Amino acid sequence: MEKINRLELTARYAETDMMGIIHHSVYPVWFEAARTEFIKMTGITYSELEKQGIMLPLAELGCKYLRPVHYEDSVTIETRLAKLSFAKIEFEYRVVLNGEVMSEGNTVHGFVDAKTFRPLNLKKAKPELYEILKSITTPGW
Image (cartoon, rainbow, N blue to C red; front, side, top):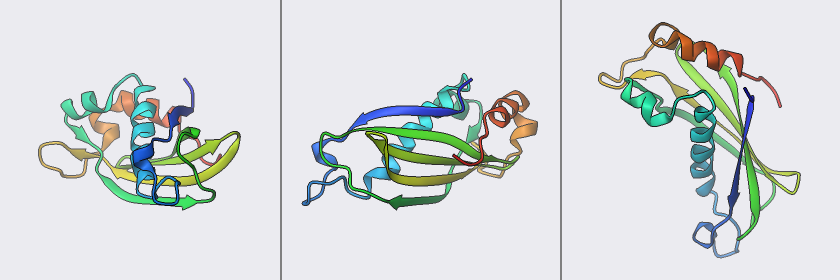
């Protein structure tokens, strides 16, 4: 199984600001799309995970904007699982254009029970999923 997922996106006009560059608020949306595709690599979709009673609310979000992305640029969002514990998961992202890193980001999510929103021990609740995630955790690019 791959340890890094790559999602190809083309920057849309609606995502730009007056300067013709992708607005900073778009990057978390791109990270979400990339994270959703990354989760699919495990053999389960985000919605299936939620139907099984596990949700991943966002606890932290960070982004460094290194270079601007413009309208119609074709970028690749690279996603990897950086850290995993029984209670939370951290993803890291890179937005790449023509081999150059344009931005870097991360999100941290907690595992919670979908009905109660109480913290959930993923290793106990879904041991097979926990082991898959553990096997694709990659600290450091």
